[in-house]
View 1 (cartoon, rainbow, N blue to C red):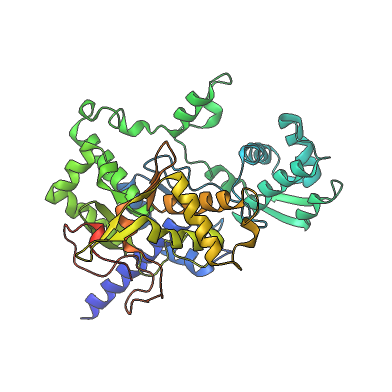
View 2 (cartoon, one colour; view 1 turned 180 degrees about the vertical axis):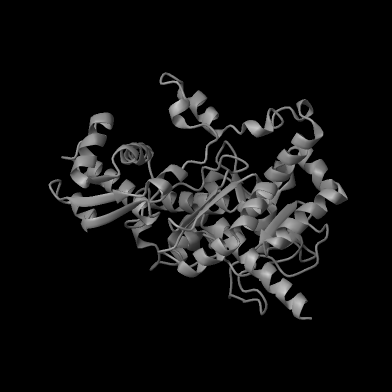
Amino acid sequence: MAEAALADDLAAERSRALRILLGRPLVDIELDVDDFHVVVRHGAWLTEWFEATCGWSLVVDAAAGFARLAKRSARVDVSRPLRRTRGSSQPFDRRRYQVLCLVCAELVRHPVTTVGILAGAVGSQADLDTSRKAERSAFVDALLVLSRWGVVRVTAGDVESFLDDSTSNALLTADTARLHRLLTSAAAPSTLPDDAPIDAAIDALLAEPRYGEVASDPDSADWEQKTRWVRHTLARRLLDDPVTYLDALSPAERDYLANPAGRKWLRDRVAEAGFELEERLEGLMAVDPEGIATDQQFPAPAGNAHQLALLLIDELTDVGENGERMVGGLAASALRRAVDRILGEHPGWARSHREGDGPDLLARQAVDLLEGFGLVRRTPDGTVVARPALARYRSGEPVVSDRHALALFEDRPADDRPFADSRAP
C-alpha cells in the first residue's frame, strides 16, 4: 500500500513538472522557486520523456537557476506572437523582432553593458534612431522581454526611463547561459550564408534533419524514422495545440492513430503528463484539469475581444430539431452586422471600438482569438467558418463543473461521438 501511494505521488509530481514546462518553457528560480525545484528534482526523467515523446531537448541548469525546454511546433503558428510586457501587451512587430535579435547578438559579445552603449551598437547595425520615441520604444520592449526571461538583469538604473529620455541610462548584465539557449533551431544562424534569401534562411532554421524528408515523402524513410516523426508530431500537436483535428493530419499520422498500438502510445503519454484526453469523431483534445500547462484561457474575462468572441458563438452555431448543436459560418458582411447589433444591444460596452474602424478591429481581434484556439477558420473571401469544437460553447449564465472547473469538455468516456453532439459546461 505504501509503495503504491509513493508511486502515485511520484507520478503526480512528474506530471506536474511536465505541465509546468509545457506552459513555461523557460522556468526561472527567481520567478517561481517551488516549480523550479520540482523540475530539477526530476530533470533526468523529464529530459528523457520529452526527447522520446516530442523530440524536444530539455536543459536543466540548477547552478544557473533555470530550465529551458526547446519546444518545436508541429506547424508554423502565427497566432501566438511574442507580446510586449508594457501596456495592453500588443504583439511584436517586424521592427521589434529585428531589434530583439540584434540586441541578443550584441549581448553575446558584450554581456556587461549599458542601455546607451547597447543602443548605439544596435543603432549602427539596424539604423536605430534613438531620437525617435517609436524607435526607443521598440528597443525598450526588446530589453523588457529579455528581462522577463531572466536573460538580462538591470543592476542599476531604469530601462523604461529611456522611453522618455534618450540620455537616461541603466547598467545591464546578460546571462549568456540563458541567452545561448533561447534559440531552438537545429542550425545556428551564424552557419547560414550572409547572402542567403530570407525564405531559404527560414527553412534552414526550421529544418529538423533527424527526420530526413519524411514530412514531405513518408515512403523515403525507414520504419523507425517514420515512426519517430509521426509520434513526435502527434505529441507536439496534442500537448501544445488547443485542439487537434484529424482532417489537419497527414495520412501517416491518421494511420498511426487508427492503429490500436499507436493510439495506446499516445494515450499513455497524455496520461503521464496529467491531461485528460477527449477523443471524438473529428479529433482529439488534451485538457489540463489544473490549468498548469495553460497560458491562455477561453472564455476568460480578458477584455472586449474575449467578450465579443463569446457572444459570436451563438451567431456561428445553431440547435437542430433533436437538440444537437450544429456549426455554421458568417460571411464578412454578416459578421459586421452581428457586431453592430451586439454593440447596439450593449450601449455602455466597448466604447473605444464604436467609431471609425473600431467595430472592424474588434471583430478581427475576436475572430483571431477564436482562430487561435482552433474554434474557427477563415476562408479566402473572409467568411468565418465554425469548427466542431466551437459547439462545446454557448453564451449564457456560467455553469462551473463540480469536478474540473477548467475543463473545456464534459467529463465523458472517450468514444467516436462528434465534438458537436453536446454542449460545454
